[in-house]
Image (cartoon, rainbow, N blue to C red):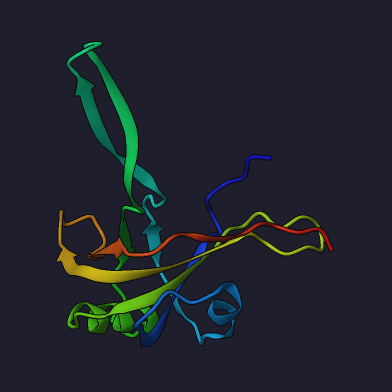
Length: 156
């Protein structure tokens, strides 16, 4: 079933993470919602290519190398009273990884929505001031440093 991205939410745990939590550990963390998000961006594993060409058969072979969960580029209307945006800006000032949770708006009637958990470094937190007829934006890049832990939507 396809679903709209509207209603999706992202949260940050303000405690730095030194290792990748299990699903149970992710669910036990304290989360702070990040509000006014316009764009969440993309995230998920992509494998790097390792190629090898043998002289004998002149055939290039490709195998999977390391996996990269990507960079999630978020854009949000700047709200300096928002606890989630304050946490993002504070996290960018450190060298540590933080846990993130994304909740989609895809719950079946009376059920629970799907969720994604991951660990990331907040690589940037910059302001964007465009035209006179626009909103001041806070743009953040999250370097995802873990696998994406998926929880699928469930019926009641």
